[in-house]
Length: 449
Image (cartoon, rainbow, N blue to C red):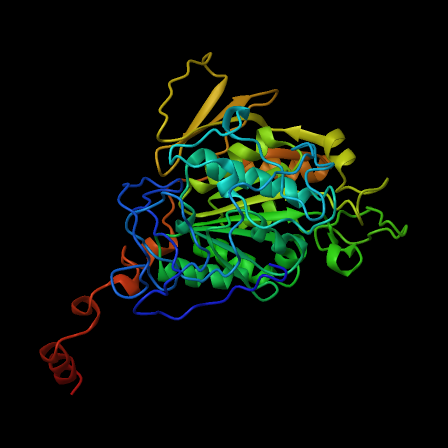
């Protein structure tokens, strides 16, 4: 996260005087079913804030019991009155400039609107972006901000995770009151696994890049999918290494041309195809410049209890925005073939919509939310693994940029359920639950004789 350093914090018995305001109760789902309470202060010892504390002061009314976290965030929260960028959102061309916030619009486009927690969208921002003017990653950040705002997610229940690269800087630019951990290059999934096992009540939101995921981190990507850790894993995919002058990454398409004129001779790693082979339970692909599609996909991923992979084509305006690129804005707009038209109905808005029979498929997610998939010009069922496999093979063969929800499985067990991990974070359990009595220890020793 650039200059803002995040690190694992030790458990403290009492919180410092400047401790942040605690958030509300346990979220049963992403989006946080919460029980509001009076304002309290985090104490990170027993029965309080879990393993660590959030160092950014929070003066909002997100109050009540604190369910803790696995990491400590020392990035200062953005001011509530921060002025958003005037760049146009969603077109991928000027979503945010250097030193600007990712552009977001308040709910319904009305200034001063609040969500179901009584918070404005500005309170879901982070630090100012230092990415290049027009970077697709800032558009993704704005989609994350809006998704979390509209779902009413409580930030102290979110752990943001990333590795190394331009994409991995972006978690600093959204959810300034969430926990955060910027890991070693390619090792974010291991850190995410540790956080998820230490405190299963946290919403894990990861942002990585094509290098961090498909090159140095490919092994970790495979194993986190195999485990089915509840994790929103967004890959900001631009096909080049933006921090090291734009060399091809492992997701660059064969035949793609660099700014220097060099042609890529190597086949691309298809992150969605690989995820399907490894048993991922939520797979989607989108374009950063398409908020109508990306926003419901992020919301659905936040409501899914398993590893949710979203491969987002996020153009690099500095090194991969030229003729011959297959990861540019122009190429994406010309070649985007949506599988379906997406909608999302959160669990707290059980809206009933009548559709013509056979035109829409609904998938109910773990929290009761529903993602709706309106048929366009093809018959497709994203709950059919074999159909998903054929779709990915077709997109490779025809060199199509197919976008939408490729596959979802709501039946597979998440990692914590497979391992029978306790619902309560270890740091919140009382001594009576974690410290065996003298008699119990004597019984164990006797059994070992």
